[in-house]
Length: 96
Image (cartoon, rainbow, N blue to C red; front, side, top):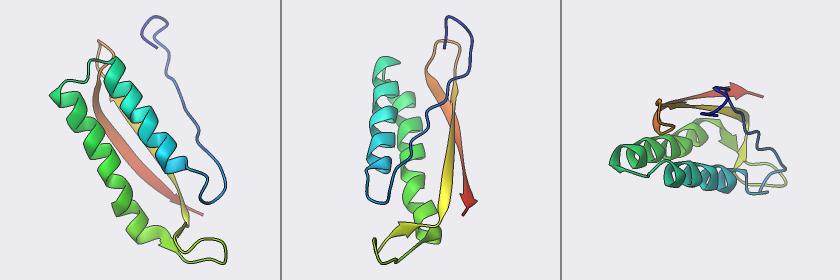
């Protein structure tokens, strides 16, 4: 990303209950660790991860397979500084 100055994308998909949210948390933890993990980086990670329950509270409902199934897709954009550290983020949801 830094060497080639290219944007990167990670797509996490899977069936209900497959661990998509956990995978996203692991990715955010990895990014914060390799970028130095200072207090500001940790804060950005925490804010992005804490937005997930808010989105879910408006878009989940019970189904035959899962009592808490999402009715939306999530898109999270992480903004990086010149040194590769996360400095902000933007989340949005898309109704299915």
